[in-house]
Image (cartoon, rainbow, N blue to C red; front, side, top):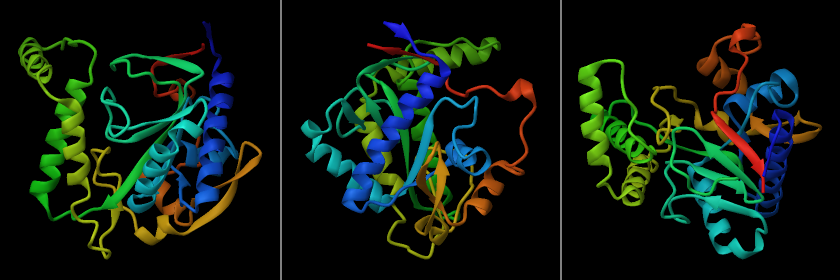
Length: 266
């Protein structure tokens, strides 16, 4: 297998995004560029030059429609496939990934679950910041999911922490990861009937950053790599809350990808 260059990873990931666009446009499923991909669209009209993945978001109702479409039309997707706990018993994350199986990813720090070049799909759920017990339970569950999805025990510099990590890693080997992710997914949706609440990707992020549902529901079309893609109408407020002055380039030493993987063409 031949290892891909950074440019080839970006162009291959763009093809995955284009397939998502095709499905969502045809099925009237709303989605939007998010996180680093949203910064890239606004600041660079394409990828952040050193970025190595694509992020999109969906409000929960659209996310579930996309999941169900991919399950129903699995055989029609060709080389593309949905990676999600409902489609794979070996999947290790609480978000979905849409992947091109013509490629292979070797990911540091995670079990192999058959990932190709991919797009991360983040669901956004209603968040009640006053429900402390709910938030704490989600955080605790995510920690166990992370441990259970690790390929091997990672030592800590602190001896006591190493012992504790070794013990918790051993316990994590006994966990039914697929069942735990399913329970976490259901719990993440607890407050979705409360339409007046802000939303967040509570199933993934540790921070308390929340956004207006209306800022995500309504979209604008912006250029990304020569094509038009949807972004939240409240992108400025969203990116400012997440990153501060997002139009300012980071120092050169920080201009590196945040995923640690190698990609190959099969």
